[in-house]
Image (cartoon, rainbow, N blue to C red):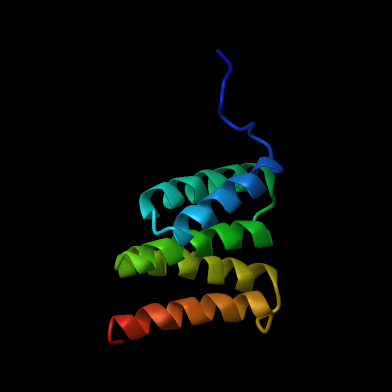
Length: 112
């Protein structure tokens, strides 16, 4: 029997991420989160700290948690992404705005 797991390469993360996005769109949050967590794990292994793909994975996980009403956990992921953007990019970079918007949406949903 062959191993059906995808190879652990940075190139495999695009496929894993896309599956996670599709599952998220189908509201299969648990499965989507698993794919995004695996994507994040591999990206953190192969990419330099602060890489835009790592922050993308953090935001994807945060979005899934947000949609499930897990606001505190979602904030943790979005704040981590924002911190990476601030540490590795200029503060007016579009990616910073995405993270700030995600954080603002959660705080609004919490009534904060």
